[in-house]
Image (cartoon, rainbow, N blue to C red; front, side, top):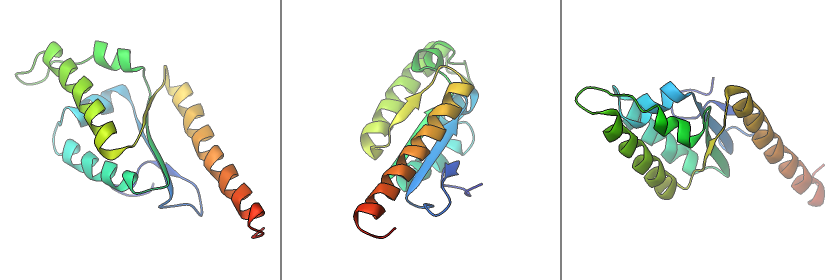
Length: 134
């Protein structure tokens, strides 16, 4: 665990430089739609991620599925929440410049997370070799 506001995953030796936040469909709904204090906390996390060399939000469903399964909540209809999800995710990607990677399944999200971190590690290792640090 990386702690509150730091994402879910990083690499040993690269904490603060490369982090990933992973969201299930339900978690993404609740976070983006602002159930409890999750939305404000997540905005602070996006701000932290935006300062890193490499960061992303990996979602365990497609964007289409996230929207198609938008729940009713409180006084908001599923259609209203679908619109909020769509607009808010686009706005956060623009504002924080942290990409969101939508995957078709949890297993695909695991692969994407692994490969994202692996690519960062390999790139950093190659840079060190080129600079004569290894």
